[in-house]
Image 1 (tube, rainbow, N blue to C red):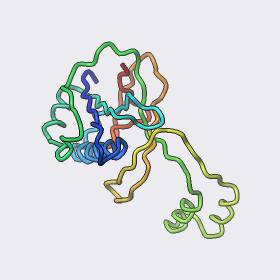
Image 2: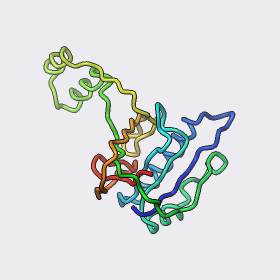
Image 3: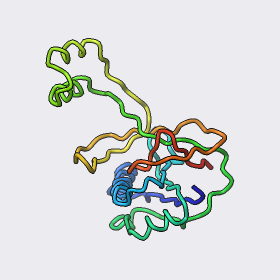
Image 4: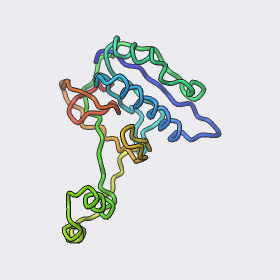
Length: 184
């Protein structure tokens, strides 16, 4: 991960920053899924309560160039500013940027488990008594799954900054629970 590409969504009177970032991220998800290489990671350097208006892609010069040749941002050019693929400056550290799945509706999860045959109706009722809803204050984007077509909130966790890089694969969302991206 020696190069990066930074994309900023531009404020628009018709669409909020969150809507534009979700649309940009959805297009990226489709492009990364089509590539299927797991060699590009993402980060949101302006994240706070929301992901922010900047999406940073991390990878090698060749992987980011290949992604850009796919013209994956088609239709969003009026809503975002894209920099050039640039060598990573001196990193202050590395961090994992990963997906966190929050079990916000125990009833929905248990209904799904019964439907899939993982639990009986009686086991699900018993388990429901002990389960609690989970909540998080992590930034999130609304995305649509390529495999199921379902819309859901993708919660994004920027892990602690560490002193050394960890190599690994990234999902079609550009996220990984173990691989790190340079933080600067």
